[in-house]
Image (cartoon, rainbow, N blue to C red; front, side, top):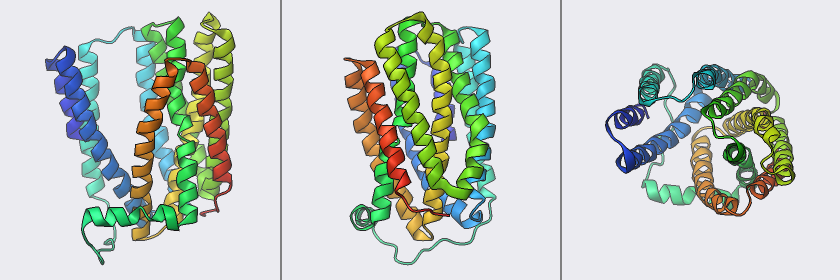
Length: 320
Protein backbone atom coordinates (compact mmCIF):
# COMPACT_ATOMS: atom_id res chain seq x y z
CA UNK A 1 0.00 0.00 0.00
CA UNK A 2 2.82 2.39 0.85
CA UNK A 3 4.62 1.82 -2.45
CA UNK A 4 1.37 2.28 -4.41
CA UNK A 5 0.66 5.61 -2.73
CA UNK A 6 4.22 6.80 -3.30
CA UNK A 7 3.71 5.82 -6.95
CA UNK A 8 0.58 7.98 -7.01
CA UNK A 9 2.61 10.91 -5.72
CA UNK A 10 5.08 10.44 -8.57
CA UNK A 11 2.23 10.25 -11.09
CA UNK A 12 0.64 13.47 -9.83
CA UNK A 13 3.98 15.26 -10.08
CA UNK A 14 5.08 13.98 -13.51
CA UNK A 15 2.00 13.09 -15.60
CA UNK A 16 -1.08 14.93 -16.86
CA UNK A 17 -4.45 14.17 -18.39
CA UNK A 18 -5.59 10.66 -19.27
CA UNK A 19 -2.15 9.13 -18.66
CA UNK A 20 -2.19 10.34 -15.07
CA UNK A 21 -5.78 9.13 -14.57
CA UNK A 22 -5.13 5.62 -15.86
CA UNK A 23 -1.86 5.32 -13.93
CA UNK A 24 -3.55 6.29 -10.66
CA UNK A 25 -6.42 3.86 -11.33
CA UNK A 26 -3.92 1.05 -11.94
CA UNK A 27 -2.07 1.84 -8.72
CA UNK A 28 -5.40 2.04 -6.91
CA UNK A 29 -6.21 -1.53 -8.02
CA UNK A 30 -2.88 -2.76 -6.59
CA UNK A 31 -3.50 -0.71 -3.46
CA UNK A 32 -6.92 -2.34 -3.01
CA UNK A 33 -5.49 -5.85 -3.42
CA UNK A 34 -2.91 -5.06 -0.76
CA UNK A 35 -5.60 -3.64 1.49
CA UNK A 36 -7.54 -6.90 1.15
CA UNK A 37 -4.49 -8.89 2.31
CA UNK A 38 -4.01 -6.53 5.25
CA UNK A 39 -7.67 -6.83 6.24
CA UNK A 40 -7.41 -10.61 6.61
CA UNK A 41 -4.01 -10.51 8.32
CA UNK A 42 -4.90 -7.67 10.68
CA UNK A 43 -7.97 -9.41 12.09
CA UNK A 44 -6.04 -12.67 12.50
CA UNK A 45 -3.21 -10.99 14.40
CA UNK A 46 -5.65 -8.89 16.41
CA UNK A 47 -7.49 -12.02 17.48
CA UNK A 48 -4.24 -13.68 18.58
CA UNK A 49 -2.62 -10.75 20.38
CA UNK A 50 -5.44 -8.64 21.82
CA UNK A 51 -7.86 -10.17 24.37
CA UNK A 52 -11.62 -9.90 24.11
CA UNK A 53 -13.13 -6.73 25.57
CA UNK A 54 -10.06 -4.83 24.32
CA UNK A 55 -10.47 -5.20 20.56
CA UNK A 56 -13.24 -2.68 20.07
CA UNK A 57 -11.48 0.10 21.93
CA UNK A 58 -8.27 -0.65 19.98
CA UNK A 59 -10.06 -0.12 16.67
CA UNK A 60 -11.87 2.92 18.06
CA UNK A 61 -8.72 4.59 19.33
CA UNK A 62 -6.92 4.05 16.02
CA UNK A 63 -9.89 5.54 14.15
CA UNK A 64 -9.96 8.54 16.49
CA UNK A 65 -6.28 9.34 15.93
CA UNK A 66 -6.66 8.95 12.16
CA UNK A 67 -9.81 11.08 12.20
CA UNK A 68 -8.06 13.93 13.99
CA UNK A 69 -5.32 13.97 11.36
CA UNK A 70 -7.93 14.02 8.60
CA UNK A 71 -9.82 16.79 10.38
CA UNK A 72 -6.69 18.95 10.31
CA UNK A 73 -6.42 18.33 6.57
CA UNK A 74 -10.09 19.16 6.05
CA UNK A 75 -9.72 22.42 7.97
CA UNK A 76 -6.74 23.33 5.79
CA UNK A 77 -8.81 22.73 2.64
CA UNK A 78 -11.77 24.60 4.11
CA UNK A 79 -9.83 27.81 4.77
CA UNK A 80 -7.02 27.50 2.23
CA UNK A 81 -8.91 27.49 -1.06
CA UNK A 82 -8.10 25.35 -4.10
CA UNK A 83 -5.10 23.02 -3.54
CA UNK A 84 -2.43 22.81 -6.23
CA UNK A 85 -0.29 19.98 -7.61
CA UNK A 86 2.39 20.44 -4.97
CA UNK A 87 -0.20 19.98 -2.22
CA UNK A 88 -1.47 16.67 -3.61
CA UNK A 89 2.04 15.38 -4.29
CA UNK A 90 3.25 16.13 -0.77
CA UNK A 91 0.05 14.73 0.75
CA UNK A 92 0.39 11.42 -1.10
CA UNK A 93 4.12 11.21 -0.34
CA UNK A 94 3.50 11.66 3.38
CA UNK A 95 0.74 9.03 3.28
CA UNK A 96 3.04 6.56 1.52
CA UNK A 97 5.77 7.05 4.11
CA UNK A 98 3.23 6.52 6.90
CA UNK A 99 2.14 3.21 5.37
CA UNK A 100 5.76 2.06 5.17
CA UNK A 101 6.23 3.07 8.80
CA UNK A 102 3.11 1.07 9.67
CA UNK A 103 4.58 -1.98 7.92
CA UNK A 104 7.79 -1.69 9.96
CA UNK A 105 5.81 -1.27 13.18
CA UNK A 106 3.55 -4.20 12.34
CA UNK A 107 6.58 -6.45 11.76
CA UNK A 108 7.59 -5.93 15.39
CA UNK A 109 4.37 -7.35 16.84
CA UNK A 110 4.96 -10.63 18.65
CA UNK A 111 2.37 -13.31 17.97
CA UNK A 112 2.17 -17.05 18.40
CA UNK A 113 2.34 -19.10 15.23
CA UNK A 114 -0.81 -19.52 13.20
CA UNK A 115 -2.37 -22.85 12.28
CA UNK A 116 -0.62 -24.44 9.30
CA UNK A 117 -2.11 -27.93 9.26
CA UNK A 118 -4.25 -28.91 6.31
CA UNK A 119 -2.74 -26.48 3.81
CA UNK A 120 -3.68 -27.05 0.18
CA UNK A 121 -4.34 -25.42 -3.14
CA UNK A 122 -5.37 -21.83 -2.51
CA UNK A 123 -8.09 -21.68 -5.18
CA UNK A 124 -9.61 -24.99 -4.11
CA UNK A 125 -9.58 -23.92 -0.47
CA UNK A 126 -11.16 -20.59 -1.35
CA UNK A 127 -13.96 -22.39 -3.22
CA UNK A 128 -14.55 -24.68 -0.22
CA UNK A 129 -14.68 -21.70 2.11
CA UNK A 130 -17.56 -20.24 0.12
CA UNK A 131 -19.58 -23.19 1.39
CA UNK A 132 -19.64 -21.38 4.74
CA UNK A 133 -22.37 -19.17 3.30
CA UNK A 134 -24.51 -22.27 2.78
CA UNK A 135 -23.67 -24.26 5.90
CA UNK A 136 -23.07 -21.64 8.61
CA UNK A 137 -26.35 -19.87 9.30
CA UNK A 138 -24.95 -17.30 11.75
CA UNK A 139 -22.15 -16.32 9.39
CA UNK A 140 -24.58 -16.13 6.45
CA UNK A 141 -26.85 -13.79 8.37
CA UNK A 142 -23.86 -11.63 9.28
CA UNK A 143 -22.82 -11.31 5.63
CA UNK A 144 -26.39 -10.39 4.64
CA UNK A 145 -26.54 -7.77 7.40
CA UNK A 146 -23.14 -6.38 6.44
CA UNK A 147 -24.25 -6.15 2.80
CA UNK A 148 -27.35 -4.17 3.77
CA UNK A 149 -25.28 -1.92 6.03
CA UNK A 150 -23.26 -0.86 2.97
CA UNK A 151 -25.80 1.93 2.73
CA UNK A 152 -23.86 3.82 5.43
CA UNK A 153 -20.84 3.96 3.10
CA UNK A 154 -22.54 4.29 -0.29
CA UNK A 155 -24.78 7.18 0.76
CA UNK A 156 -21.87 9.52 1.42
CA UNK A 157 -20.90 10.33 -2.22
CA UNK A 158 -24.51 11.14 -3.09
CA UNK A 159 -24.68 13.63 -0.20
CA UNK A 160 -21.75 15.39 -1.86
CA UNK A 161 -23.42 15.26 -5.29
CA UNK A 162 -26.54 17.00 -3.98
CA UNK A 163 -24.48 19.77 -2.39
CA UNK A 164 -22.30 20.21 -5.49
CA UNK A 165 -25.32 20.64 -7.72
CA UNK A 166 -26.01 23.90 -5.95
CA UNK A 167 -22.52 24.93 -4.82
CA UNK A 168 -19.24 23.68 -6.25
CA UNK A 169 -16.59 25.67 -4.38
CA UNK A 170 -13.45 24.03 -2.97
CA UNK A 171 -14.49 25.10 0.52
CA UNK A 172 -17.39 22.64 0.28
CA UNK A 173 -14.96 19.74 -0.21
CA UNK A 174 -13.13 20.86 2.91
CA UNK A 175 -16.42 21.06 4.81
CA UNK A 176 -17.30 17.48 3.93
CA UNK A 177 -13.81 16.22 4.72
CA UNK A 178 -13.91 18.04 8.04
CA UNK A 179 -17.38 16.67 8.86
CA UNK A 180 -16.31 13.12 8.02
CA UNK A 181 -13.11 13.31 10.05
CA UNK A 182 -14.78 14.89 13.08
CA UNK A 183 -17.60 12.37 12.96
CA UNK A 184 -15.16 9.48 12.99
CA UNK A 185 -12.67 10.90 15.48
CA UNK A 186 -15.21 12.09 18.03
CA UNK A 187 -17.25 8.89 18.02
CA UNK A 188 -14.84 6.06 17.26
CA UNK A 189 -13.41 5.63 20.75
CA UNK A 190 -16.91 5.69 22.26
CA UNK A 191 -18.09 3.14 19.71
CA UNK A 192 -15.04 1.02 20.56
CA UNK A 193 -15.84 0.84 24.27
CA UNK A 194 -19.47 0.09 23.44
CA UNK A 195 -18.40 -2.67 21.03
CA UNK A 196 -16.41 -4.38 23.76
CA UNK A 197 -19.69 -4.72 25.65
CA UNK A 198 -21.88 -5.59 22.65
CA UNK A 199 -20.62 -5.26 19.08
CA UNK A 200 -24.02 -6.45 17.85
CA UNK A 201 -25.76 -3.49 19.48
CA UNK A 202 -23.19 -1.11 17.98
CA UNK A 203 -23.99 -2.43 14.49
CA UNK A 204 -27.71 -2.06 15.20
CA UNK A 205 -27.40 1.53 16.43
CA UNK A 206 -24.98 2.58 13.69
CA UNK A 207 -27.20 1.15 10.96
CA UNK A 208 -30.27 2.78 12.49
CA UNK A 209 -28.66 6.24 12.58
CA UNK A 210 -27.30 5.90 9.03
CA UNK A 211 -30.66 4.79 7.69
CA UNK A 212 -32.61 7.61 9.34
CA UNK A 213 -30.12 10.29 8.26
CA UNK A 214 -30.16 9.05 4.66
CA UNK A 215 -33.96 9.00 4.61
CA UNK A 216 -34.07 12.57 5.96
CA UNK A 217 -31.60 13.85 3.36
CA UNK A 218 -33.34 11.97 0.57
CA UNK A 219 -36.72 13.46 1.47
CA UNK A 220 -35.22 16.95 1.89
CA UNK A 221 -33.44 16.79 -1.46
CA UNK A 222 -36.54 15.51 -3.22
CA UNK A 223 -38.78 18.31 -2.01
CA UNK A 224 -36.12 21.01 -1.64
CA UNK A 225 -34.47 20.64 -5.03
CA UNK A 226 -31.33 22.79 -5.27
CA UNK A 227 -32.32 25.14 -2.48
CA UNK A 228 -29.25 27.02 -1.14
CA UNK A 229 -30.14 26.03 2.43
CA UNK A 230 -29.50 22.38 1.54
CA UNK A 231 -25.86 23.13 0.75
CA UNK A 232 -24.89 23.83 4.34
CA UNK A 233 -27.46 21.54 5.95
CA UNK A 234 -25.99 18.48 4.26
CA UNK A 235 -22.49 18.68 5.89
CA UNK A 236 -24.03 18.30 9.40
CA UNK A 237 -26.01 15.33 8.05
CA UNK A 238 -22.76 14.01 6.59
CA UNK A 239 -21.24 14.35 10.06
CA UNK A 240 -24.00 12.18 11.55
CA UNK A 241 -23.59 9.68 8.71
CA UNK A 242 -19.86 9.50 9.48
CA UNK A 243 -20.62 8.86 13.14
CA UNK A 244 -22.98 6.07 12.15
CA UNK A 245 -20.55 4.56 9.64
CA UNK A 246 -17.80 4.51 12.28
CA UNK A 247 -20.13 2.53 14.53
CA UNK A 248 -21.02 0.09 11.76
CA UNK A 249 -17.34 -0.50 10.91
CA UNK A 250 -16.15 -0.95 14.48
CA UNK A 251 -19.14 -3.09 15.41
CA UNK A 252 -18.83 -5.52 12.52
CA UNK A 253 -15.04 -5.83 12.83
CA UNK A 254 -15.22 -6.53 16.54
CA UNK A 255 -18.11 -8.97 16.16
CA UNK A 256 -16.32 -10.95 13.45
CA UNK A 257 -13.04 -11.19 15.36
CA UNK A 258 -14.81 -12.23 18.57
CA UNK A 259 -17.26 -14.74 17.09
CA UNK A 260 -14.58 -16.95 15.50
CA UNK A 261 -11.23 -18.39 16.56
CA UNK A 262 -8.18 -19.93 14.91
CA UNK A 263 -8.26 -20.56 11.17
CA UNK A 264 -12.05 -20.11 11.17
CA UNK A 265 -11.52 -16.38 11.77
CA UNK A 266 -9.38 -16.13 8.63
CA UNK A 267 -12.01 -18.03 6.64
CA UNK A 268 -14.78 -15.75 7.87
CA UNK A 269 -12.89 -12.57 7.04
CA UNK A 270 -11.73 -13.68 3.59
CA UNK A 271 -15.13 -14.96 2.47
CA UNK A 272 -16.95 -11.94 3.91
CA UNK A 273 -14.58 -9.49 2.23
CA UNK A 274 -14.88 -11.28 -1.12
CA UNK A 275 -18.67 -11.32 -1.08
CA UNK A 276 -18.89 -7.68 0.01
CA UNK A 277 -16.36 -6.66 -2.66
CA UNK A 278 -18.52 -8.21 -5.39
CA UNK A 279 -21.67 -6.65 -3.94
CA UNK A 280 -19.94 -3.25 -3.79
CA UNK A 281 -19.22 -3.47 -7.51
CA UNK A 282 -22.81 -4.41 -8.31
CA UNK A 283 -24.47 -1.99 -5.88
CA UNK A 284 -22.13 0.84 -6.82
CA UNK A 285 -22.82 0.38 -10.53
CA UNK A 286 -26.58 0.18 -10.03
CA UNK A 287 -26.54 3.24 -7.75
CA UNK A 288 -24.49 5.22 -10.26
CA UNK A 289 -26.94 4.40 -13.06
CA UNK A 290 -29.96 5.13 -10.88
CA UNK A 291 -28.47 8.48 -9.85
CA UNK A 292 -28.70 9.60 -13.48
CA UNK A 293 -32.48 9.49 -12.98
CA UNK A 294 -32.80 10.66 -9.36
CA UNK A 295 -30.09 11.13 -6.72
CA UNK A 296 -32.63 11.57 -3.88
CA UNK A 297 -34.25 8.24 -4.81
CA UNK A 298 -30.88 6.48 -4.53
CA UNK A 299 -30.29 8.01 -1.09
CA UNK A 300 -33.76 6.90 0.03
CA UNK A 301 -33.05 3.36 -1.16
CA UNK A 302 -29.70 3.26 0.65
CA UNK A 303 -31.42 4.57 3.78
CA UNK A 304 -33.90 1.70 3.66
CA UNK A 305 -30.98 -0.70 3.22
CA UNK A 306 -29.41 0.71 6.38
CA UNK A 307 -32.59 0.13 8.38
CA UNK A 308 -32.85 -3.43 7.04
CA UNK A 309 -29.20 -4.05 7.92
CA UNK A 310 -29.82 -2.75 11.43
CA UNK A 311 -32.67 -5.23 11.84
CA UNK A 312 -30.45 -8.03 10.50
CA UNK A 313 -27.72 -7.16 13.00
CA UNK A 314 -30.29 -7.16 15.82
CA UNK A 315 -31.07 -10.81 14.99
CA UNK A 316 -27.40 -11.87 15.27
CA UNK A 317 -26.19 -13.56 18.48
CA UNK A 318 -23.94 -11.73 20.92
CA UNK A 319 -20.25 -12.40 20.30
CA UNK A 320 -18.89 -11.09 23.61
